[in-house]
Image (tube, rainbow, N blue to C red):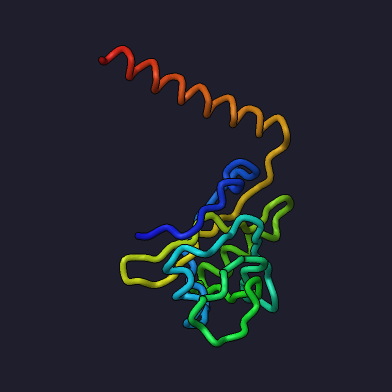
Length: 149
């Protein structure tokens, strides 16, 4: 598994309840561009259009050797099974729930995949607690490492 892009803010801004794997409909030059790690899902989000999931505002740089004139931030269709689609859409209809892109990667077969999560937004206090817990975990690791040496 080769990771192309991570959405670090997803874990900071949301409580992720469930994760799903989705395929992405891409053009050939977009795939080539992603193979040289020129993609970002930092400010992207997932929308529901007529019962289908679409990745919006995902940046994939134009491949230098390509003659194609494609939009770098165009909407890209996500591919999930019907069962998963209904589960995701049903969960996102609940109050406060949203669909968030987490990781863009190539799987072992060489296909571009996106990990998406059904999440609930964090409040300011929750974010502070997350940061505090993270820093305490780092401090614990240092203490354990120094004791063992």
